Every structure is written in C-alpha cells, then in structure tokens.
Image 1 (cartoon, rainbow, N blue to C red):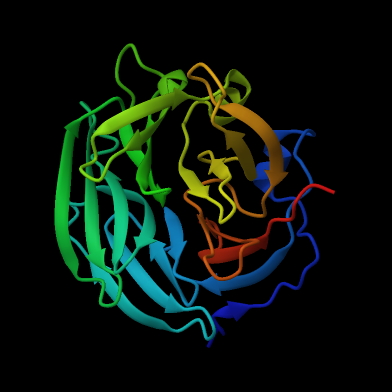
Image 2 (image 1 turned 90 degrees about the vertical axis):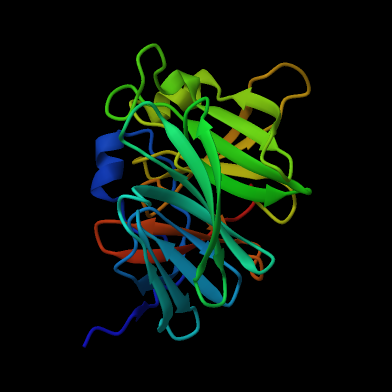
Length: 271
C-alpha cells in the first residue's frame, strides 16, 4: 500500500516538464516540505491548518494533515456541480467558487459546505457575470473573487484572457470594486486565466495561473484599476487553486494533477 505522506525535505525540487515548456525564464522553485496523495487533486486545495480540503469539479476530500488519512468526502451530481475550482475555509464553512465552465454563456455560483462534515449547505447563485468564477477568498471582512476569461475553450466572443478580473465583494456578494491584471501577468496566463488566489496572513495577495509552475505576488494599485506585479516565485506544481495555511504562515498549499498530490511549499520572503 502506498503511504499517503511523502516527506520531501526542504530542498528545492527539480524542474518539472511544465517548467521546461515555460522556458528558461522559470524562477527558482520554492522548497517543498510535504506531499499528500489525494485522488481529488484536480482543481485546488484549502486548509484550516489541521485538515486539507482537496477539490475536484464535483467532489471534495477532507484529509488530516498529520497522517494523510481521508476522514470525510463529498460527491455531487455533475449536472449541478460541473466545475468547482477553488475553496476557502471561512468560520465553520468551506466556501467554494463554482461555474458552468466550459459551457457558455458563463454562469457562476458560490457553494457552501459544512467544513466538519462536508455536507452541502447552500448555494448563492451569481448568474451571468464578467467571467467564470474561479477564485473566492476571505480577507479584511470582504470576499475576493476572480472572474476568469479565456482565449478559447470556455471563452465568450469578444472577451479573451485579457478580461480576467479581480473583484472585491460584500457579504451579499455584490461587487464593490474591481481590478484588471497587468499585461505581463496576463501573458503568463494565456490562453487560460487566473485559477488561484489567496491572501497571506500579513495581507499580501498571491495568485496563480492555470498551468505554469509559478506563484505571483500582486498588489492593489495606489491609483487606477490595474494590479501591480511585485514578484514571481517558482512552484513545484503547475498552477491551479492555492491556499495559505492559517497555522504555518509560510506554507502554501497547491496541487499536482499529474501525480495526484497535494503539495505544501515553503514561501520565503525576499532576501
């Protein structure tokens, strides 16, 4: 039997095939401290510090980090849950971004689960929006969402990946403000979009794309409507949804679709 925990030490991993495809400008990879096997590792991961929630389109697995044991799971009907992407733990809830991707016109919803049992609690339907909801995070008393757009599959005529939008929302999921992504980051997303975003404990925003093994620190601008790219960090995993660990502030959770793993990377501050 394959033991579910893979201790990777604190040495940087080797370049992945995705990084080779990305080109010679791939940054140094953040060291990996832990790998955990999870068949749901297709869209993203979220953590409460003790457990890791692993997300697929229509299923979620809850694992105990200390042992790698799956202690709860949920399976939904695919017609109702065609594409859940990222989740975050907010109080007693696991709150997930969901959409009808790759169907068009794009519609989105917010799905609430009991974080203890994974019972589906309720849905907040957002209907048509400025894109496909791929990200939802809670920070500073607000909801932060990313509405993705694509240059191809799942995209709508007249809106490609350049129309990807970060939106700040109130408790009723009404838009309060929105920002575009800088061109140099949009180019890294192409032809897909932003698949992950998470606020760190010290109030910094980090995002990922769909397939590049990279993490981007961005900042809200002092003026205007375009986010500012602060730095690029290499990851051992190729894109998808991410989440900061609330107990270990340097630990970032992501997934590796190819290996079916949830991966903990140690993100260090700049020297």
